Length: 325
Length: 254
Image (cartoon, rainbow over the protein chains, first blue to last red):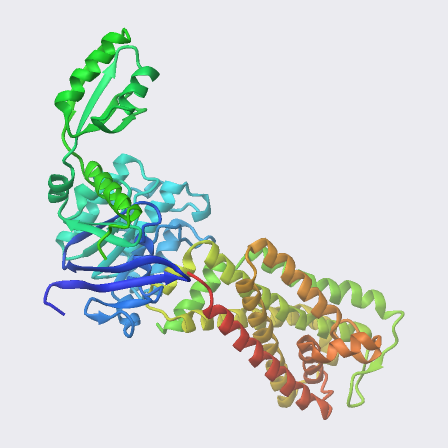
């Protein structure tokens, strides 16, 4: 193993019958790195995690995790990793505290240490108010918090997090992400999947974008935005709120690559490579339709823009049979 | 702590449905104290082997104790179902355990539940059984062997069922129906030899028949030359079902 490479993956594939779920993916993850794995639904993220955690055998390719061979040393790998699955996982007959304690027990954590860690984790993850509540009675968000917190009851060198913040409110989500950052500073390596791109940007050192089983790009969040987020977003609001005519006209405009409306803020969002021609067009349309533009500005390119561009371009390449093999 | 002890403790602690267990223990007691005494007046005492003549209430009480091995078996399937339904199956397999350790821990937990349940029911039934209980070393070994192999068979059977069936509701219905068939084609309620010929044939393949016969032979010191043959058949059936359960278990898609 290269000194600081915790995960080394080369040409790893997984087939389910004729369907290729993961197609010859290759990447390395360094110690204390947070490696983001982003992709649309069904892109192959969870299958990759299942292979790297030894739950699923790969169909082909090679990988080492923490220096151990994926195919022959699965048990040694599992002894040093933690996994928070995308799906719920909980013991239904127990309360939160007992559930954490029992999980620590099966990982052979000494009793006194379990007690100490449970108190610490319950504090960190703000679970005091439901620490005695049966796991079956928890809300989805509370259960998710338990699932993430529980994994820290045992020691590990590498943690796989498969959409760990689904169902969490923004405040708890931020505190979970901050806790993860703290653990990374102490030496933990994290493999992280999410659909919330802001948190990927907040947490990840590098990001791999995967689509239809293939890795499309790997780079830092900043580089991905710079390289693939060339389009700008023009956001504007109408004094009148909404206008279907305006929406229809902008959607069909040649200068607009994407058009949408944020239901929360009520702002229209236009993605374009030519904001200098789109802005006058918005004002022209507003005049013609007797509408008033109450605010308008050009926003910075986000990771989401880069992600969507990457995936959209890849989809086009696949459709045209032009994807590199 | 040993890896199996940790997993077995976890299986019992996390997945044991106390309410179901309560009713599973109460159920045999109704046979012993209600049906047994109810029918005692109209069923004359009969020979269970080796010249041992016992009353129907005693006969049924011994059968009802072995009924708990079926309950233990149901628990094995339920443990696996709970873990699959609640995502703990995958979670544990991504932990420092092997599939073999996980399934063996379910079997061990089932054996503990089945044997402990039998002993508990036996304890409750002691006022009925105690008078005719003829303890010998040979009898104790037969009782232990019957309970162990019976629980092993039905535990493995329930695990195989829970793997094959796609929903927990279907599992509950099918396992209840299957165990109902096992129960009424065995010698729990009546000697198989006195049943209609179709049931007699079915009882020869039924592991619960052998579990019950061996248990009674050990309990009432009614050992006949056929008991060792029955023990052999039960051991083979338990081993075959265990292999089937392991093969089915290995095919669970994650």
